[in-house]
Image 1 (cartoon, rainbow, N blue to C red):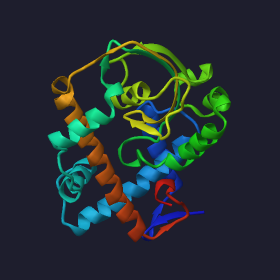
Image 2 (image 1 turned 30 degrees about the vertical axis):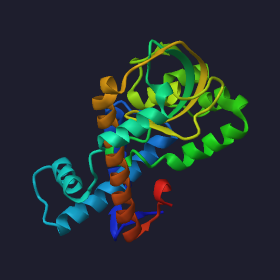
Image 3 (image 1 turned 180 degrees about the horizontal axis):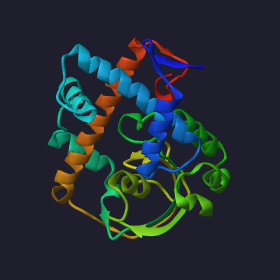
Image 4 (image 1 turned 60 degrees about the vertical axis):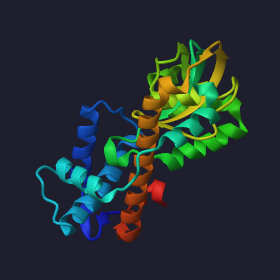
Length: 248
């Protein structure tokens, strides 16, 4: 079926070109690659149309979209009280010298605007694993976009500072033997994480982590606000031939 966004067709040549661009950027082959390309094209179409309505014309497509998001997506910097509350509620995440071992299943949705659009499939697999954790290695081999998938998702042992902050926080706040209750989003995509071991560690003071924590929590607020803005654009659009999973 032909894909149309408010009457504008997204043809196979355009989809193939977007897939080639994603491959060149290092994204792996697989069933997610085509979906990610289509999702990216739909969102770009919607945002370029919105930018035209607002008379935003500042250069390249990337610059136009960046200006649109900066102008239209509003969120506040997280304050110190919020950071302190997060620190208090997640003290296990702020230990130094702590070690852990974990496995993960990685879903790579593509770049930028399509980053939140593989949630439906990933959340379905997460729900299955919460009912049947013993299937983790088999599902990692089948679905993970990380090379570790061939090993059942096993990443081995690692310490603080060796993983991206979102992944690290999830691992060091989850008890051994447990699967994280929610998908973990990082720059690489969405992760389902199973923690297999944890040991050691001394608590780092709030003052030592305050600046990095504020940047992290503010970034999370920005991602939420961007997703909400995109959801509004999608809900107001007439999209034929494809359903965006994160906004279904």
